[in-house]
Length: 489
Image (tube, rainbow, N blue to C red):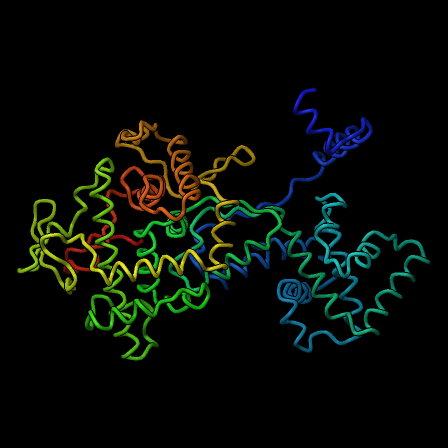
């Protein structure tokens, strides 16, 4: 027996079952196309992200207008839209008297029916809250033209009010409408970094019923860290310090930062070059503490990156081995044919003879941070979800979705990754995805080629996620401001 037919027979054991499924699938193709929502560059900004999902990026308001244009005033439509978007908050107000909530149930049932016309009854049923699915289905599909059915519906609503269940029922109805307003969610890269609430964003994404993710450069930075890249880990922690949400990271993912803070306090001094952004509301002692940690993470990152480039000459990034180019006595650096004075240097732990070498204490701190990062249960759940639902690119409805760029030369020809004999374009996207998934199979190793390629995807010349000639983090920190040539990370 054909193996495909054998697998098919497990789910559809009879001819009738196969015919029923064919009829069902053909009928589904005649339904209107569901609404897709495309979002990118969330960067941990949960409130804005959550608001967009609640209102369906404006689609909810449009549904309310289409359905109730001749029944409700503009103010009433806006009030209804706000209720559906934020039912848990609006119910705390006095907008709706008890008797008005009966009418609100009817309106939300009508709106639910209107938003679900694109879906099969089976799909709608799966979206309903389990505790109220029977009641909602009864109200959703009954024929109000029949007097007996109308009285039946009215009695159901009255009982919800009498039993004190109407508020919870209304909230669940609103949340179901939110779910059905958007059929499928595309996250086109960069969930993490800069904002303070990436963990909440991930929790919200994991609750979505239909979603795909195209990894951005900040997403693969987190994947790289979780799968063992010290360079990726130190970079994301440094960015968290720079944007002043390191303590939120500690809280949300239970990352043990105590050894890092203790070492930084003993080793580094106040340094305004490393003052974090968004630090206006912190005390002077907190600011100095963050400046110290910021310096520690930056120096450890530069050392680890230097080690990576020394073991990967095929990356052809020798010019970024900057620690070897510094005159530590004069605090100047020769770079690209010019000399630059270093401002805010903090090279206490660097040996001029072997600047890439970590001190014993730095090695212990990195090992501690990596252990804490990889053994956070919440982090594990988030990274596994990101790996499962994510990819470098996706073809969906004949559209190619990807974050970042497709590297080309001055003439518009695809740039190839010559050291791996990988052609440019889509093949380049596929190569980096292969390396990320390969690294995920051996998360404890950390310095294998696949994991190093995740870091290369963050900052390499022929990365489809980077799009620049260099990641000029060192220059941003240490060059005088009139020579600053750096962009954002």
